[in-house]
Length: 360
Image (cartoon, rainbow, N blue to C red; front, side, top):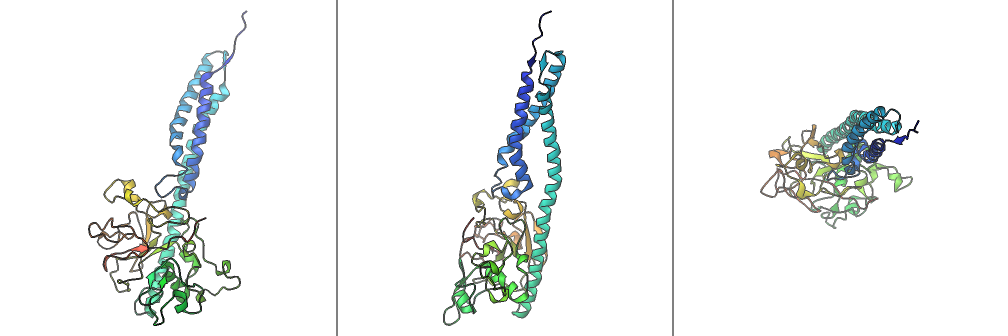
C-alpha cells in the first residue's frame, strides 16, 4: 500500500489567520465602545481602525466552515481541524461580546447623562436661591465693567477687589466664567462635586487642599482653583457684558449646559466648526453637541430651572444655538465663541466655559 500523505488544510490556516487579524482589529473598537470618551470630538479615535474587523470576522467564519467541510471530505488526508474551529469560534465570540457591550454601553451612556442632569437641576435651584438675595440677578462675579478673562487676579484673595483686579472705584477687572458659578458654592453652599459631570473626562471635584493644604473653607475662595476647567464641567450663559440675565427673563432661555464643544477641553481639541451643519446629515448635526456625552447631545438647564437632555444644541429661544452667538443670518448655527465673545441681543443664549490653562 502506498503511504498516505497528510497535509494541513491551507483554507484552515487562512481562516485562522483572518480570525486572529479580525480579533486584533476588534479590540480597539471594543475599548472605544466601553468608553466613548476615547473618541475625539470628530467621532474618530482608537475605534476607527476596527471598521475592517467585522468583514474579516465574517470572512474568517465562512472560510473556517468551508475548511471544516473540506477536511471532513478528505478522509484523513488533511488536518487543521483545530485551526478551522478557531476561525469559526472567534467571530462567534465577537458577536456575543458585541451583544454584551451593547447592553452595558447603553447603561454607561445613560448613567453620566442622568447624574449630569441631576447636577444641573441642583445648580438651577441654587440660582433661584441666589437670585432671591440679589434682586433677581443670576450669579455674576466681579463688579460693573468686569470682563471675561483667562484667569482671576487672585482666586485666594482676602477681598473681592484683589480677587478680580478691580479699579480703585470698584469697577472693571476680569473674571472667569467658572468664578460666577463658584458664587453658588460661596453663598448657597452647593458642593463642588455638583459641578462635575462624570462624562467630562479629566474633571474632578474641587478640593482646596490640593492647592492650599490645611485651608478648607470654600466660602473664603473666589474660584475653582488656578485652573477651574479641571473642576467645573458646565458652560454658563455669558455673565459679563451688556446682557446680564435675571430670573425674570423668558423661562425657555438656556442658562447652563455641558461644556461648549467649540472650546478646548482638558483631553480633547475643540470640534471643527466647519463640519457642523444644522441642516446636514445626522453626523453633521451632532458635530455641534457636547463631547462629554459622545456627541449624542447635552443636558441643558433652562431659566425656569427645568433640565432636559437635548439632542441638538439649537434649543433655546427661537431655535437659537446655545453654544454660539447669532451672526445675523442663522440662529441655529451662528458663530463659534472665543475669549470676549458676547451675545448678539437679549434673546441670544451664549453658553461658554473657560478653556484649560494647561493639558495633561
